[in-house]
Image (cartoon, rainbow, N blue to C red):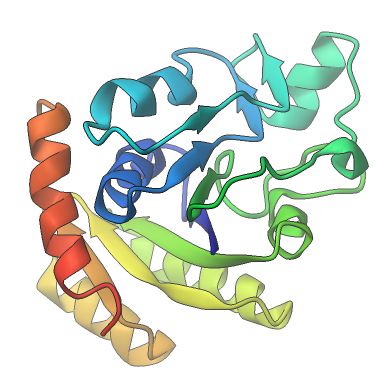
Length: 203
């Protein structure tokens, strides 16, 4: 199964969540488009402890930390979605998007357009800041408007019980995991959250 990790904003914790998913499912990892440093592929590789996960190289590795379409344009590149091929694997594959789901890749394609192309189910990462309710509901609405399958939501950051409750009430989606605000992210923390996630992944 392919799982596409998207989020409600740029610094939501997609890479941390991707590492947790890889650890919990012993899944492979792939970030199709990387713009800027640090490289999320290297970060995931450093955080995953199991010996089965394979980290696959990016389809596009861009230097400029910006929207992929702008980063590619600055470097004289056009991101061609038709050339992106999902890595072959016998395991589940965690695919990490770039920014939010409506981030542009080129003049016509958005990150959300990759999801059906990769036949993936979506995991939405929602960090809890002022305005996150609106951003989460808009993200879910965009995904559903394209009839994309959503596995559930992972909340990241300092807990906000009321925000979480109303988001789950309106979306009718399951909360897959709650992640605390972690100052230091390391393989041990990833393993702890992976154990929790794995215990109710198929509920």
